[in-house]
Length: 58
Length: 258
Image (tube, rainbow over all chains, first blue to last red; front, side):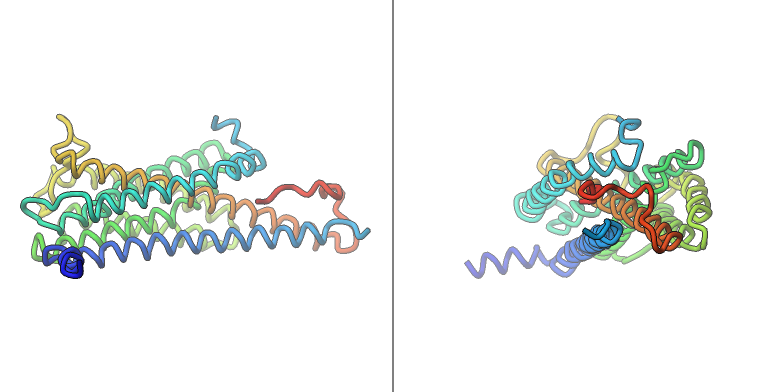
């Protein structure tokens, strides 16, 4: 099993090219996704806060 | 369809309903595509396992071009018809397009080293894609360079439209000039020359990237509209510090922002 996995991760000798390529794709696209989501959540919260302040006090 | 989504309130309603499905679908298709590309697809008979880089490099390149085209069309609509969502759409697409272009360049370099024997070569294909990357960055910088947001949007839109010239140069660079880069093997006259066992995972990854783009694009457009509304509300409050704005929503009818 371990030998099989070693063989797989070696990528026929191209491991140093294949894995960084996938790592870069995941890091860059994942980074954009996370940044987009955080900024979206922040905008939703800020808008809710301002709208609550605009409502008349009961 | 387009005209029904034309006003920002309608857009927020529809995009809010669509977004969870789009994001879920993107995650599923990307997971399937990754397993297919990294495990199930066969190694190439000449390139061996290094061909697996193709499954991210090529879809990233397709996205880099299509997102730019989308951004340029939205910019043209913004310039000609002053549509209220067009600038938002173009500006939301730019960082995602830049990310795909960067992924295309980086993975291409990592593929070029073992296959061509070099990380980089200043030939027409690689250089024109690098220019595309700088067009994205230039657009983002230009949009944010003005104190007056509408002037920034206008300048950026002009750059995006003019930059469209670069797209056919990228597409046909492999036919017009000598290059290390291989010619098209999927979108070509006479049909794809790539074998079906590699074409299918390639298309799965391409669909995954497209869905991911669509989801992120909607998220960023919604963020921009929220922030625009926030600025308007704050200005309003500054103008009338002691009284409730006359046109504010009545209590209990807070507009949906999710």
